[in-house]
Image 1 (cartoon, rainbow, N blue to C red):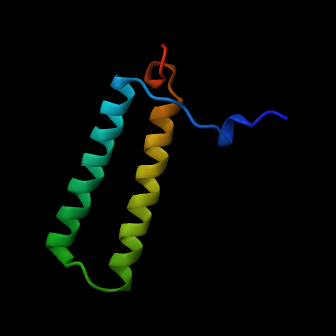
Image 2: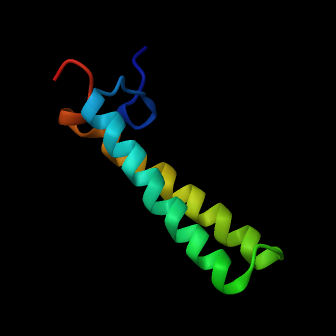
Length: 73
């Protein structure tokens, strides 16, 4: 049986890893800025953190699926 593409993982190249780091920094800066405005406490902020974490995951996954981000390309 073969793993479906949707669930597979990729070894990323140095360029892919650098882009993943850049993506993480964008989300870090966004959450830091939001917390400065509204604070860190409360259920709503917990949801904000969760949704940004989710969005960051999918942005990194999109990056990892690009051929130029994969090891050996």
